[in-house]
Image (cartoon, rainbow over all chains, first blue to last red; front, side, top):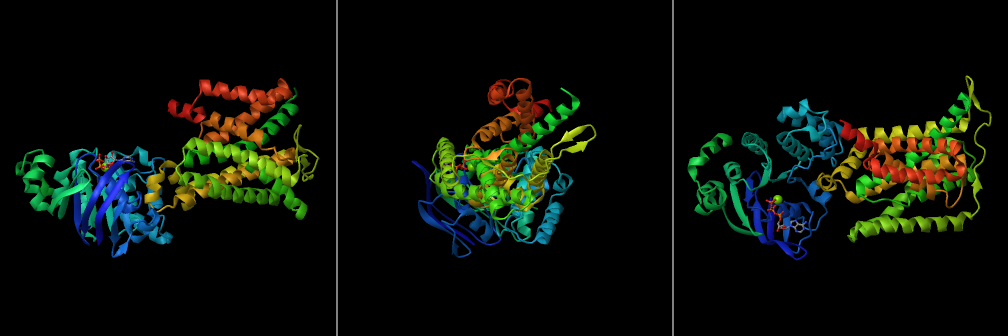
Length: 248
Length: 294
Ligand SMILES: Nc1ncnc2c1ncn2[C@@H]1O[C@H](COP(=O)(O)OP(=O)(O)OP(=O)(O)O)[C@@H](O)[C@H]1O
Ligand SMILES: [Mg+2]
């Protein structure tokens, strides 16, 4: 569904991505894990058309998207939940959702999609008239995901949805991602929190210093000593006990 | 001062204040959406006044129709200027200061252009209102002032309704709050910023027709009101919508009352003294003071 090939991106002198290649197939949850400054956000921003590409190409459902403006990419069916949630703080929860449906023409469709989001996230329905800034971090993350869903995407890009959330809320988010996939969504999840990401993903790539250093099925990565050492705090399976609970 | 004179002054101050509010609102939404202090906003006001007048000479329409014509023309001009000049600068990623300076250049250019087209002499607006004052109990009020207040407040109400209850208005707000996130929703920033300038232009042009009808139209009529609207917007809290409305009205009232109680000659100076004082004691304006109070 998504093919990224030999992608190189630089901010002036700083090279953020160096020849990155990977793919996401329909219905998959694919994760990219990496530490601070590895280039994860840059990658998602580049897929969305927010940065300029130095070399390489991106295609979505067989169509080249590299070089297309952001609104074009969104209309092709890619929605991006940015790092730090970035909800519109001074708009009400429901108005955030309405803005998320910017490219949807039919009012009736928007109405029914909003009801769908409220079914998934009852908390948002309770707070529909509140300003987004008054929500808790977890609720804001739900709103950011709901807002992205309003464009009726085929592929959802999630940038560190667990950032700054308590472990129990992170599990909520993980469950949400799994339920979205169950309903046919394809997801590219970027995370520093490898534990959660590998628990829900089908496949994973590890990115360091703007390069993909290795990739495998998520279950294999969970046991890979390099991953355990660098991203799971050196403690292997004992700590992974909770994960199947999330996955079920 | 008798009560009647007092009320008359109050209505006069309110009328000029509403005009400042309209200009200040335009400044505020542009600041919110782009961070630019638009020094050419006063000239957009002038264009509205001039076009309202030109329309009247072509077809002597009633005042509300001139008001709409002037507002729309100014809106279109503002969009053209934004797309042609400011956007080009933004695309080239020039520093913000340069864009602000380009608005000063635009201000001077538009004044010179208007001088070329309409001459240097002030042009009187036609008498569009009954001279007979409206008798409200013991108080007599000029119908013109009532018209100005009603049209200006109607315009402000329309803006509020647009921003809050239409999808386009919500998008304009989203762009002001987080342009990058707004872009990820599929909002085209070029179009959103151009419509913001368009709305500011409509507000400014509307103010121009009102201002012109109160005094006269001339190539440099917008300059000082443009600056005063900055004071008004700062008074309300730069970038705040409610603050701009309130700031304009408060500034208009202060100016009107100081003009009568001190001297008309120093009316403009009083406004500028006020600006310095606000910056010293209330740097966030009314909006900031209210936030702190909460
Ligand atoms: N706007 C920018 N200008 C210059 N350099 C940037 C910019 N954004 C990112 N970088 C640099 O590019 C590299 C990759 O940054 P990126 O934000 O993609 O990393 P990340 O993996 O998302 O990190 P984090 O986990 O901290 O969010 C870093 O070295 C960063 O300093
Ligand atoms: Mg990041």
